[in-house]
Length: 136
Image 1 (cartoon, rainbow, N blue to C red):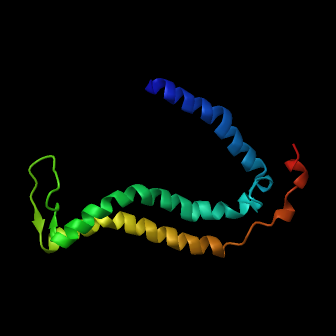
Image 2: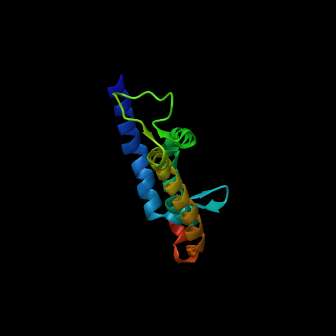
Image 3: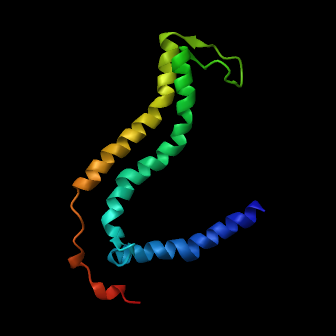
């Protein structure tokens, strides 16, 4: 069953996704959604979208880090561990909890920084592209 799903994913990528990406690379000015040229929002995808896609899984570490920070120990009370684990308390426990939250905070900060960098980049001049390529 998993092999069939993987094969369908492979076929979808080969016959739909990759040709669409190739076509977009050749004619980026031809694509628009709701009247907005997608080529103008490419920088937002790179500078904001990619860091946010990393932030979503990193967000799973935040509740455990906050709980450990409040309790002043790592791992927090009630956390299941795989083997006997020495509990770090005090400053060391808070430091370990902070390190658990740090990846999500850094990636979110990178995404906010990227938003301002993408808006500062000059928009792509659509007049330099040949509009006759857009006709099918």
